[in-house]
Length: 217
Ligand SMILES: Cc1cc2nc3c(=O)[nH]c(=O)nc-3n(C[C@H](O)[C@H](O)[C@H](O)COP(=O)(O)O)c2cc1C
Image (cartoon, rainbow, N blue to C red; front, side, top):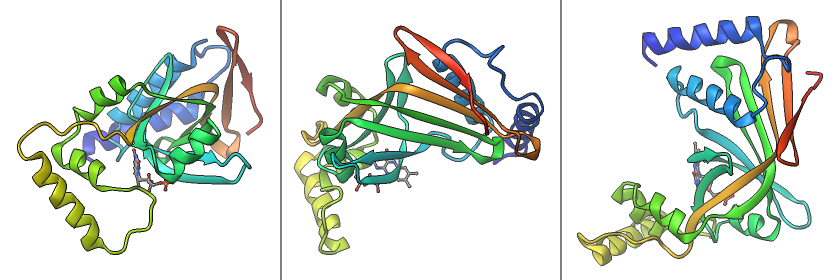
């Protein structure tokens, strides 16, 4: 982190901890507050501000969690990409609900999001896939994500084969790879404050608008 980024992060941290967030002044739209905090985290120069822990569960309610990258968001929801045959995808497809959490310790901020899952269209996934580096595209083709792998040499052999297969041509979207959108029902913003008297504001979808509640920390 550069000195400027560190200073920015410290200023945001100081402001956040001193002033906190209030249900009386925050935006009625949680996406506006999300955008404000996310842009702040990016400006603060944090490492991977888009890293989030994604929790899924089987249809019997057995949970699992892993780190993911948040790749986009708008009023429709929050988007991430993965292998559709992976463990998380199998769980999302049989039980289309999920939760994720973003944590920015330097800013003493956490955002928790819960909601329903939908698969992105092939066109949406293809549009994103085309922006990935060629190495990442080949990597997606080469991984049977979450399946047992004999040894590392086998993975590297798959990558070499796919490199040869696609040559200098375009690498198409693998049929087993793409995105999901989490359509939020709850979005909770947590701002660390002194003496653990933290601020927690939870937005809950209520028809076409959102209800805001303050929760005990
Ligand atoms: C910081 C970080 C970001 C990651 N982002 C992604 C991602 O966007 N998509 C993905 O499929 N895996 C991502 N991974 C790997 C996952 O954590 C996980 O190992 C993989 O998706 C397999 O999970 P599963 O077996 O539960 O399906 C990331 C890992 C780390 C540490």
